[in-house]
Length: 273
Image 1 (cartoon, rainbow, N blue to C red):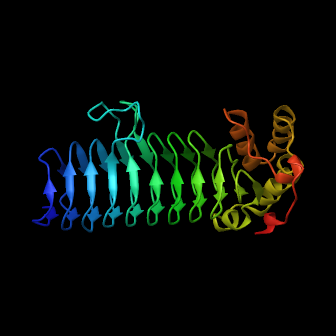
Image 2 (cartoon, rainbow, N blue to C red):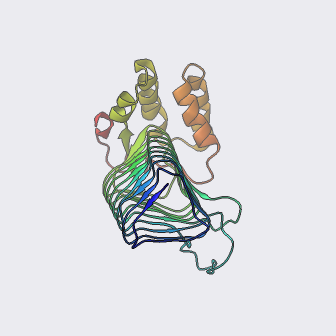
Image 3 (cartoon, rainbow, N blue to C red):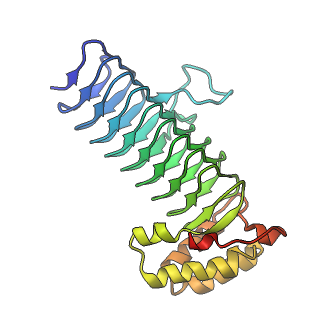
């Protein structure tokens, strides 16, 4: 039977696995499902519709499933809520808002680590193994691919996509889409290739070499979209990683993040970081 501290308020509509632990001062209401070994340390607010996957740990002052910060959304309107995967860690003051759409939830993948005061806006999508450092935030409808790293005080604008294994450096922000495996540093500024991230993920050396090649040939000079797709497709015939970048660019609805040298700015060697 789930362990619930007597000072916590848990609605009758909440479904708890037997191994769930709920600490003091929590308030859980609505259609909420907590799977096996979910641990809430205390003083957290959870509001359904909300599903939390097995093994997830929730620290004090976390809020999950509250209404979206959208002026068109009024309290009591139907929402798809929030769906959270397995083995996530949400540190103090993390907030994840419910979706504005009634049928599609805000989605968080497996093994996501959100540090203090990180925030996911309404209708956001976060892939597996994502890390968001203190004060990292994404706006409504933004998408983070698998293994994305967001540094402290970084931000992703609403409706913006960040591709798999990309990195948003600390104190940085992006409004254009950031393709897989690349790094942004500063404001809307493409800075290089996420070599460390790719190596840690176990990507083959030839794939890393191919990504570095297209960075120099395609993204650093800031080619026009048609030419960018042509080169990516050509190289992607022998590189799944590059073909992934091609598909990301092909399906982009926003602009693609550019290197400052392609706009007359200065170049740098961030590729090696």
